[in-house]
Length: 333
Image 1 (tube, helix red, strand yellow):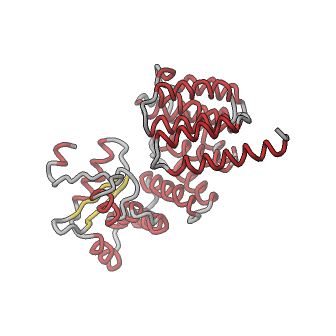
Image 2 (tube, rainbow, N blue to C red):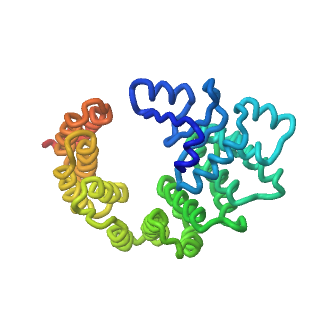
Image 3 (cartoon, rainbow, N blue to C red):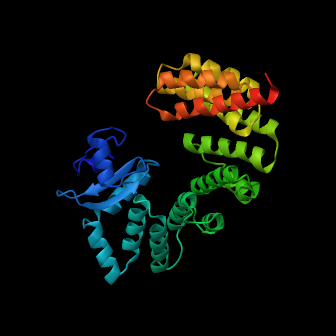
């Protein structure tokens, strides 16, 4: 990667900055992070893509982008006159980075057609775009499921990609409260990825097993046991890990008393500022679920003091106060 980056002028910008970084990201419509834009000396975009999986994957994309140093507009014009598989795939990548999943999927399907048949890399890219696009209702859940089926069926699909698809479908199943969205992919993905030993895959497998126990098997005790095993070493002394575990318990409405205790421990361990505020918010949500609305208000007030620029905590104070007052009115307390 260092050798590859030596062939270009690298300019790094933080789009979360209030100044130049944010303005630059806005000008290039760079929303997903990390976001890479290959441009010429005038600043015109030649290619672009989002995300970082690993060095090998990034280099493959980078070399593909460097192989055609024409502008995006020129690529579009060339493709309209003489479509090729390479151009279609490049435009699929580009439209995906521009948050245009419909155009991206159309380009990837055209790439598969021009290449003589579906390929694993196109099937995975199509699934990614449709999965992202379903949140904005550009694709239906049925379309996402069909593209997931396609990834699993295409010969040569990498085990890591099958694991990725199943993990995404677990998120969708959780969101839609529909275990059938995960069930067909759970065991095939776990079986295909059983030999993977890298840390990313091991964590993804562990998380998928937790989702399977909770959603498909409906066994909350097993899910809780697997979740504990999936946590990293020393997690009970790490504020961020404690918050992750407590928030998982809150989302799934189980083990709430211990979750509250562990989240409060996370508050004590967290440094002042945004991280402490985030964990305080977790404790507030758990307290509210347990019926301690008064505590939820006080915790949200503490969170707002820790991170005063975040309006979420102001809204939480109002929400929990309304719930507290409603409960008082109902009970006469």
